[in-house]
Image (tube, rainbow, N blue to C red):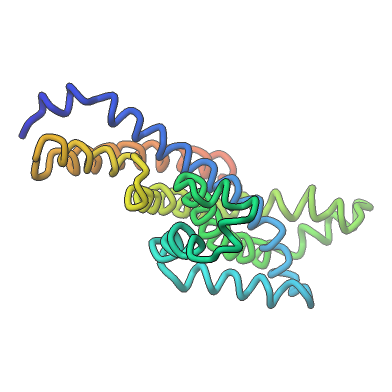
Length: 229
């Protein structure tokens, strides 16, 4: 075990952690921005939007993230009209391709999480809001969405961890994320497993922090749902 080489190349892994953090956070933020209106539309079975959103969700939940990333990074480059368009400024960059693929994937999973949370929100909460004189729009933004998001915390915490682990796909399209840093170390010094093992330990450490954070959030915002025995 060449610990000395790992320590000497700590900046390589530090850069990898930064790239992984960027990809994961941005993908989750964009994915959530997609999922909130999409999840509400699915829960309310909006006549026009429900089948379109359902198709999007099925497409991105029904195929592996690796395939989606390959199709965006390698597949779109095969079309001349894509290469001659303004979009090629972004699509020729692996970082942007990863962000697009990860965001759409996270948005699809989060859409179903929010849909389920909205549909399981007790009707009594909305009836109470109406009794207080709130309009349907006010009830949605002040009562329904906050209540649904609180209930969705455990499931969304899993999605955050899955997105962190899924971001390792970025190393396949030349990005030096955590796994990419490990692979670079192994290739540079002809090592067998030191780089990959270091990457695994870093993923485990970040996962531990995320799980701890979501446990704290659940204890704070879901305490009223705990059944006392």
